[in-house]
Image (tube, rainbow, N blue to C red; front, side, top):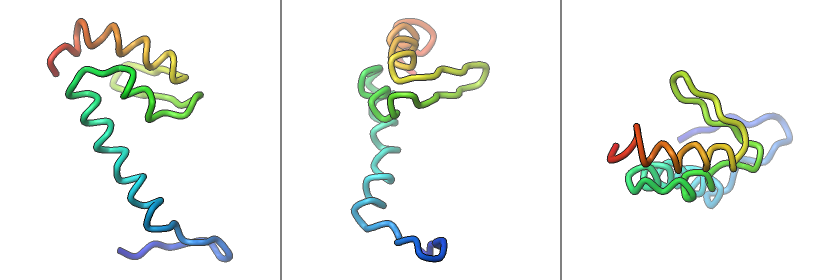
Length: 77
C-alpha cells in the first residue's frame, strides 16, 4: 500500500497503521456484544458519533445513548 505524505511529514509507523486498523474490529466487537462502554472508548473525549438521524458529541453522551439503545432499538443488532 502506498501512502502520500506532506513534505517533511513522517509516514505513519507500522504500529500506528495496525492500531488504526484495529479500531474497526473494536467497534464491530463492541456493537456485537452490546457493550456501550467499549464502543464509547474508541472515541476521544470530545468525539462525535453520527448515525442516520442522530448526532452525539462527547464520549459520555455516546456511552449514555448506546447503553439505552442496546436495551431497546439496537438490542441484538
